[in-house]
Length: 321
Image (cartoon, rainbow, N blue to C red; front, side):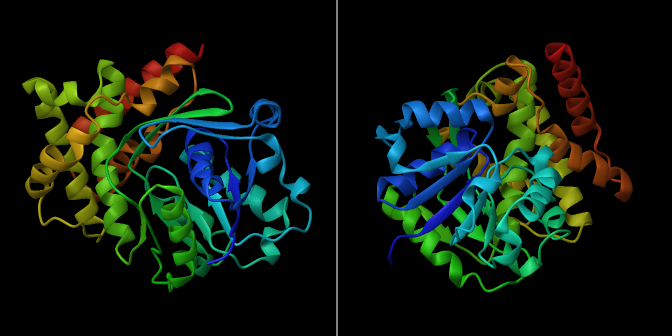
């Protein structure tokens, strides 16, 4: 495998974090982000700290811009979409209307939380071009140009929800692997995304409401009961939508969740809590909000997810004023 060229659309914690692994082994990376982030990257370079070790890249080792036009006619092998899920439609529209991407057929990989992002992108691009990545890694951005990686639960999984041949993704997975973060191509990305939905719906919002790390939610019986009901509701909605997971029941998943996933992210603080603290919009409507919206259509009881969503919306509105 030679050098791969990757455009990273969205230069938040995930975008900068994934870029660092590609840069680690000399791959070509162009980041698109807001003006403040781009200026910081151009001035200070890109820095990573945390459980995968420290890495630092000079401004001349990558390029960054606040708009897609600056990429000119350059072609890329892969496009990583790392924007927040509430910005998915706007991201797809920008990529189609403000860049030469529409003339390129390279894979677009959505590295986002939540469910439904791929369906939005297929309104703008062929479904054969759209892929998803399941990332269960804790990225925190203490400064615009720096990312800290606090936890890592499982390898990155990349694949298609539309039964497209995923062989072209092997070069990206290999590049990330070479850079130091385990990554694989899979034919079960739908199941993987629902696994992350169960994980995020039970931990992300509840951790934000109670303002505690994930492990503390497990230690207390009261929060544990709430988590289990959230997962049960999400599982019933998933089944009602005609999807499947790696587990036959919510109880099976919980056994895996408590024994495999939660221990490796025990001290991690919710990204939703981080957003609320700084007055940012949260991704609640792409997580628990999906369960509420689809559950109501299916006449599935989604009481816990409904209450949790309303609590997050209250906190989001309170701290954004």
